[in-house]
Image (cartoon, rainbow, N blue to C red; front, side, top):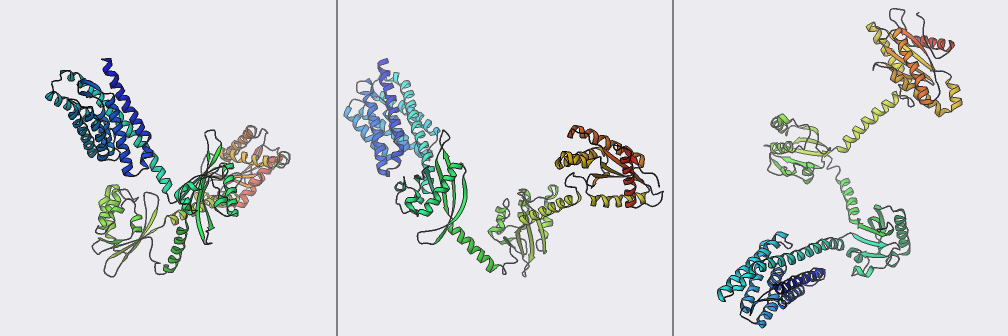
Length: 621
């Protein structure tokens, strides 16, 4: 039995060998003309079939078994009828020359295998089938062998042949799978390589790779044509000094040296360069440095696009826009015309492009309500009530022929201004303008104004309210408390010996000290109605509406303690403050903001005179 299995295993080895040869030769074969490629593959498949027959197993005299049919079927499946015909001629001739009782049936088996391969090929209907069809072909070949054994036993009494049915079917299945998957993998790899290779070679952009010395390692056809070379290979090894003027070449060389030395890419660099005839042309270039596995720079890759036509079109567009600006003053990007019944008659591309999700519905013949319903269904426009879409459609649709201007926001953050105008024939014209930039600029202006307002009302160093806000708030709160008959208190605070602290520790330390005081004041105020402000220099003020003198003294004492604690924690030095408190009481003589400040200031200086680091209240008037 081992004497039989040895040639069968050798048959599998032959199939594997020729499969590998076919795979390795795929790139070369793809470059040949169609007829040459087909004849070469046919000769290769035929040679493989003959080679398997050289190692055939003789079942009985004149009847042999080998894997030639698997080879022929795979060849027909992948390469078509011409390859199958060449292989059948080669293998069939050899089998007829061998002779024997099974010669004619062997040739028939070859032809049937080729037909099976062609049939599966036609069924697959793909230049690059998936593995399922390979498996299908393998099963079909195994079943074909079973049929051939059945036919052979009907003609000749071959009891021993039945012992080869199962092993033969298994080997045929394996051989077909092995060869088919190998060729499929090679074709897939070749296709994966050929597509990007063809894309790079045939791309209209100028694509090139250079080494560290500026020599071209590879260029595409566009680069070669631009410099007058019929074949890209003619530029390999050249530098810019070989194909352009010395000044331009030196400029490019220095630019590329900078890119490689800095390891920084140059992206979308636009420049104007005169061509050989002296006419100016525009180019946009991107270059990136290339590094090897060891991290060293080995060269750079570049892509240059001739944007002259684009520049000319831009210039012509600007000129055309200027010439037509008066006539088109009422036009915007999009224009649509609806008839008197609300059906779309005409719209330009800009109108459809303005509505990306419902563009497919904005075609002539559609009713405005259908368009609006699609707009709502796709979530294209924001602000549509989910619980009343039909009502929204009816309301908006009924306004089509009512002159109006509305601005809508879309899902992508863009804003469109829609202007409806009625024509003389009772139709409606809708003009669409993208006002996203205007809206964003408006939003930015509002935010800038708010920021300026904050800056105008806030002390830049401490973040407290500034003197202007303090004066306005004190006058307003005193008037309100006067009308309501409620008390109001004012605290003035001065940092003790701040000039000496500033002189000893420096102005930056002085700034940190003032910031510490401001933060201590913020944390000590518990109500949003209370206002802490920087009064000037190292002086601070606190307005406490609805607070009598006793309450203000408690707040002042809390602030004084917070400053003392924070100075040790944040500054490493003890900093103290003196505070003066004055109450505005409508029951007493009328008091102006100036007089209230004067009373609090007098109390502050009393605290200073009493030894600093304390709170004192102004005497009642």
